[in-house]
Length: 176
Ligand SMILES: [Zn+2]
Image 1 (cartoon, helix red, strand yellow):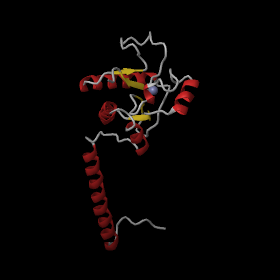
Image 2 (image 1 turned 60 degrees about the vertical axis):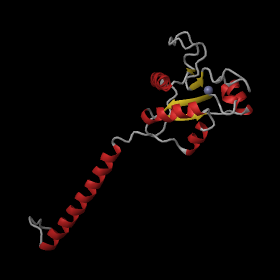
Image 3 (image 1 turned 90 degrees about the vertical axis):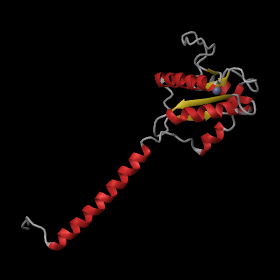
Image 4 (image 1 turned 180 degrees about the horizontal axis):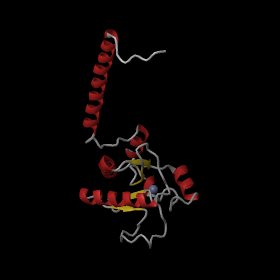
């Protein structure tokens, strides 16, 4: 088949139409991108929101604020007797029911992990978890909320003397 080096009038019209539409769509995508560039709020899913809402209002306020800049997942808020004892048996929690701060209503403790943009948790990424914990502590300080992280129970900022690492765990230091 011979190759033509020119377009017929009808073909030209069609190409122009395609071009017009393409430019239109490209402009729309650019506008969406522009509108989103300052929108850094990473929303919680319905399930995570439910977990967050089982906690003390100070924890709700804190992690709603944290999530604006540092994407995170609420792993656990309130824990009932069965879940608490299961956690303890798996050596994930220090206490049996009802001695954990997860067991009060509302819960005075929450487990939160940093996540990627597709909401995946990497439990082995200790560096990022620690980075996240520092961020949470900083925001909490600014908001006047006293919290303890499970990677530094005695709040002395030295992580090497921490005996039991519960790196997703944050609790109100003096809730009353
Ligand atoms: Zn916990």
